[in-house]
Length: 64
Image 1 (cartoon, rainbow, N blue to C red):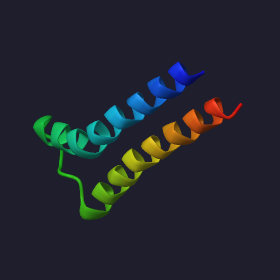
Image 2 (image 1 turned 90 degrees about the horizontal axis):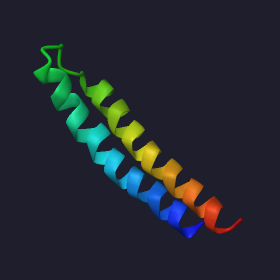
Image 3 (image 1 turned 45 degrees about the horizontal axis):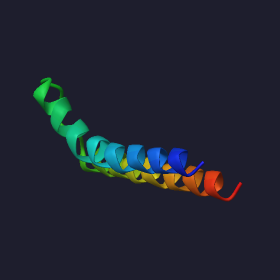
């Protein structure tokens, strides 16, 4: 169970910066319109939410 918890946290720690930082930059590189300020807040919130979700799932795995 601990190994799965570590894997989940590693996925969350990796996904948070990828979603929060690299997705808006990748979108601009593709030639799409840049994100508005509120859309950037939404993407950052999604990144933090993914990290939080992985932490909660890891906690549930460890305590089960």
